[in-house]
Image (cartoon, rainbow over all chains, first blue to last red; front, side, top):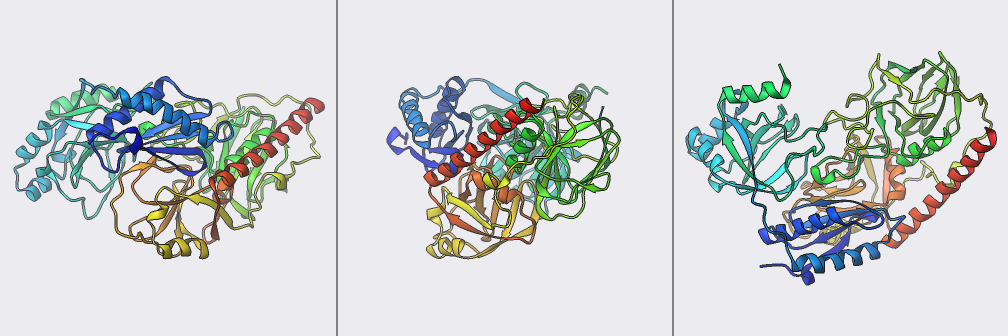
Length: 236
Length: 322
């Protein structure tokens, strides 16, 4: 069901942020409205606007309470929403392809996932690369995408003992979710592979490769292709 | 010419007032835990308030000055000395070439800020000088300061001014760190907590545990529960968000908090009281007091008015003295 302006809830997150909640549940239509709102906020802002953070069902807007009041932020947002919700964003056509070397030292849990799902490692790879994923939001770590669209067959619980470190680019599965770790981090996810491309680079103008609304496809690559990209990446 | 780090201290990092505009990319704000202390320190040495300084935690660093510099120390009193002579906090101090800044025991608070006139010569990353420890960028090489680090000043201190006989009147704008009441407003999921939990949240004390760092503080206090178990959908969180984990523990999010979270947010600490939080030592006890959003805004307006007056007074002083 599409949410309308009347379903939208506004509430404070402390004295310097306002949350706009569009729905109680995750849906593609809510996601599209949130994207439209974000597009709008990229173009137009208001006095005292700091930044916005989109999530599954909310957009949180951080503001400078010394410059602008909560009430005035809310009424600005209401006005904007009336306009934006009348013309929601068209889904993007572009797809970001993420090359992944599955299994081996770069995907130490591929066999576990295969055993748990009663599939062969090759089938796990085929299913994981077969789907198109939607980036609902970025959070948890710089450039970390929350992806929707994983085939339920691949669902595997988190590791009982999290690893203290996984390399940047590690591709994992946790429950019904799949994702890519952009930086070296402790991780409880089942690591099935690794991408040689940077999901996050503080030196880039757009430091995060993905943003909410992007569509993603994983592509299986060979060890040689992985090494080639890694060489380009590190120049050695 | 700059400083040489003779000892790193417990956790000594370069921080400014934060990295904004990238939270939608999962990039945290970072920045000083006690931005009010950092801002004041900058004003005291004639800098813009947002300039980066050095955040020292509990056990301060040992720092050698290669050239004359005007410095200030604000925030926690970690017993600072210059060439073994105790120095006063919250005022400009002249550090002559070759002098050594050292710290002793933590008298009050947890985090002290060292600011230098003109600031440090460090490259900006994504619009800020703050250190993002987990991602390893920003600040000084994306990490805490270590023995042997050498950081240049942006400017030489060439003023003849050496002696300062004034300091700022803290009581007008900086919280009394002995006051253990932290003011909050209701969080987005406040109403989902049981009436019993809502009541004990404000009646009982919380103690800061050892599991506390720049990301957040784990508090020991009453176990809190929701009216009925509920899966949360991840959404943005903020500095001062108090979230409750599935086993009922309360965690206050601090400067290095992740951009989003999936735990119910029971309350949100008001901006004016962030300094109090930043200066808590582990083992200290606090109590939460519920106020309205309007009262939170009024408190902040009042505080910022006081800071503005300080800024004006200092501008006058610098113009007058020079």
